[in-house]
Structure formats: structure tokens, C-alpha cells
Length: 148
Image (cartoon, rainbow, N blue to C red; front, side, top):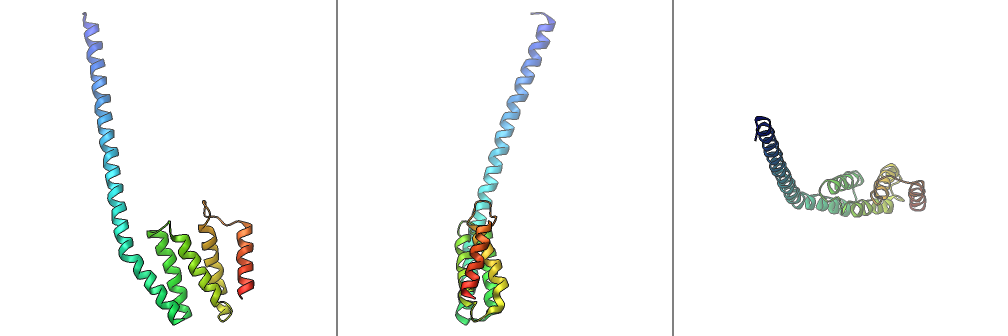
């Protein structure tokens, strides 16, 4: 083997070694990211189990008291908490709050704006992209007219 062949062989071995090192390093980086995501998910789950019951309890108490400002605040916060900690269940929470607001609309017409807003959240949360359609807006309008 001549000198040029040796240099080429050393270069090839160095290249293979660098690629192998990079692949191992990349696998470690990916494994570390997966572990970090797993830990974050566990922390979020623990936070949800701790915090969501507080929001649900506050909502139930506000419903029982019938105090409209408290009810509006607790309903809004419940939906926001569900969006953060229980995104899969968030449409159900939004729908419960919206239906409750609709039920109180006849005796409390001043909550029409908040009912409209909650209706948009409830209907939008049912869609994959979260965006309302003209038909959703019409359904909300009909809900409010019928219950108002």
C-alpha cells in the first residue's frame, strides 16, 4: 500500500468514526428529549390531578349559590384550566358551562355577551382546527335567541 492509499484509508476511518460518534450522540440526544417529555407529562398529570378538582369544586359551588359574577368567573377559569390540564376533556367542560349560561340567560340577560363567548369556545373546541364555521355562529345565535 502506498502513502496515498494510507492517507485515504486513515481519512475513511476518521470519517466513519465521526459518523458513528454523531449517530450515537444523536441517539442519546433523542433519548434525553424523550425522557424530558415523559417527565413533563408526568408533572402535568400530577398538576392536573391536584388543580382540576379545585376548579370543578369552585364551579359547582358557584352554580349552587347562583351568584352570577362568581359563576361567570368560575366558568371561565374552569374552561381555561381544562384547556391547560385536560385538553381532551375541555370540550365537555366548555359545553357544560355554556349550557349552564344558556339556562340562566332568561333571568339574567346581562350575561348574553359571556354566553356568546362561551358558546364560541364550546363550539370551536369540537372542531379539529378550533375554528368556528358560519353554521356554528348560527347555532349559537339560535341557542341564545331561544334561551334569551
